[in-house]
Amino acid sequence: MRGIWAAMAAMAVLSACSAPDMSREPPPPPAAPAPAAMRGAPPPAAAAKPAPPRPASAPTRLEPPVPAVQSVPLAPPPASGAASAPPPAPSQMEAALPPPPPAPERKTGWLVGSFGGHRERGLLTEYRLTLCDDKEVEAARLAFRPPPTPRIISEGGIEEELFSGTAFAVPLPEGRYHFCDTAFTSGSDTVEMKRRFAVPVAVRPGMVNYVGRYIGVPVFGRNFVGMRALESAYWVVNDRRAADWPALQRLSPKTMTQPPIDAVPPDEALARPVFWPMIRP
Image (tube, rainbow, N blue to C red; front, side):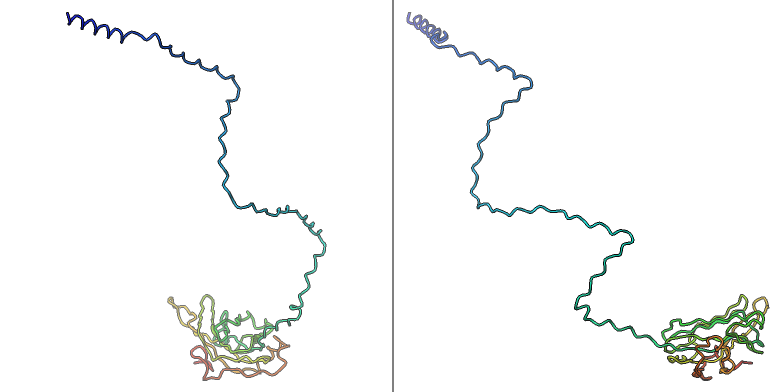
């Protein structure tokens, strides 16, 4: 009996626990969703956040106001043909300075003489002599072409029985000069020599310096086909001042108003085999 009563008591307890509690209020229903916002209406503004507190700083420095830039009208350009403004007057310091002295000028002298060919040995197509100063800088170039007939004489031409040439009068600064280049041409054959040929000739300022007569003498040989051709040449230098003076006066009458200074190189100073005192046999 006791077992039956115990089983019935346990069933009563289980039924009491599973029955709903009618004394409690039911939970409220969920809130209904808000109506949709009208089309085009602005969204509600978010709540403004409070500004952070401003830190303490140094007192503000007042700057002076910056003036506005004013535009200055430019002066109109001067009309065509109008005179330009005069240059500013020099300062007192500039006016007190003396003008710079002129550069010293080298005084000029004249180098005169004659050159050409020897008729008996055969005249060439062209004779050329070049003068250089003591720094090997070309100072003057002389060239002579014999005329086709002795009757045609140039202003400074000299036509003699054995000589056909021309006088020359070259103004040069004071200094020493020498022949640095010479050439002889016969048709298509040319013999040219570049070297220091003779002793330097001195040009004295304001004076006429006569350097002599230079006679070109050709030396002919045979070429590879046996024809006569120019092989070499040389100059014969001598003093022919009396014969050259009339041609020099015609060439430069204002210069030849005083007697010339003898500047002919002596025989022992001539640089052989280019210069000789006489014609070689």
